[in-house]
Image 1 (tube, rainbow, N blue to C red):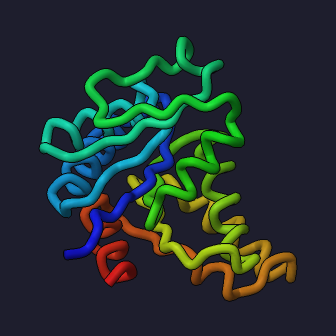
Image 2 (image 1 turned 45 degrees about the vertical axis):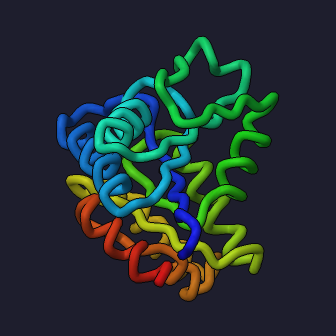
Length: 184
């Protein structure tokens, strides 16, 4: 019997401007539970973070939240989590989430989501891990980012191989399938 795999989800603490973002977060949370995986995320109860965690829990999944002390009252700790890890700093939060994860799925989000995603991809480029990452391109949300990646590659600031460190999935279901294949 193999150990339960843990999927780290990076996403916004805001619901964003389109209802499709929350819908995708809810679908992803259910999909992680249905796959028999464990979710680890930033522990917030707001926005896409909260929607992902609640839907995973509602579907019978395990959810681990990781939150630095200074964000406890800003993002609000989600209630009913399987486990809650409190950290002193954002760096420690990212380290706990990264080291606990077998793979990463990224929903729409803001600067924090982008920071976590880029750091995870950079560490892969540096040979620090080989964990898969999938971007859920809800309504084309990640297209500007993908354009920037292409621009950096054509300008020779990024190797073409960097684009092989992530999958682009049009839906949470496709992201889950890409991760399932990568982990098998």
